[in-house]
Length: 271
Ligand SMILES: [Cu+2]
Image 1 (cartoon, rainbow, N blue to C red):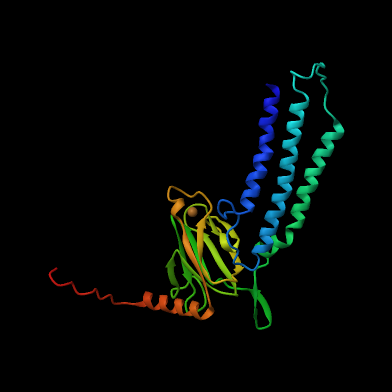
Image 2 (image 1 turned 30 degrees about the vertical axis):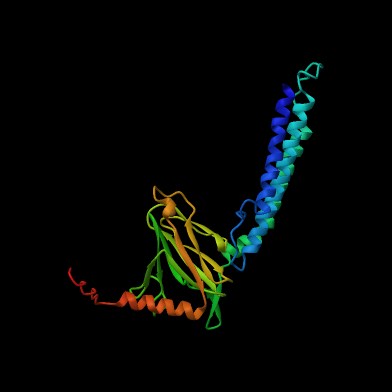
């Protein structure tokens, strides 16, 4: 019976590896990573896959060691008396230093990408001086929608001529896009899976995210922080389009917003 448990625990690395291979091979459906439509996404995917391999190998090795211990020291087979020890000081030191070194390596290895995504905001030239690129739009998370305001003619977000939309973010293709991210009520997380952008949104804090989209299309905006009963429906769309289409969409939206007169359609015959 003792060896039954050995095989049961052997199933952990076997099933783990099988699921990993099936997911990577796209079976039964391709659900590994969403399509990457950003300029920097491949670096983040590379980090993800690298850490997955690292933890995957350690997972399989520890699973196999567990199997070996259960198999070798099965009480029904091994008749030798149990030896109690106080452990191995050397072993304790070694298996503390190795994970510490690995974690330190990951921390240093990912630093350039962390800088590029969280600290190195794109700049623009103003009279020969490099200044942080202003936000194209401000996105405010609230229960349960994304409110978006674009800068109006003055080029500044937060002024009376702003253009307002809800859950419908448009950005130009092949340009560095900076977004200002805020929360109105509780914690949210602004997540653009196809652009590999995710930022917690904290009430009272003004934060910025940036990216460069390299493919046209319409993709998801989701909230990645459980923010209340309607968290699941806090989703919007991001439309990536050419500069001309973006300018036209923004002008049309601004014009619609400025309509001061609403003329309802005449009632149909017989009403
Ligand atoms: Cu939310």
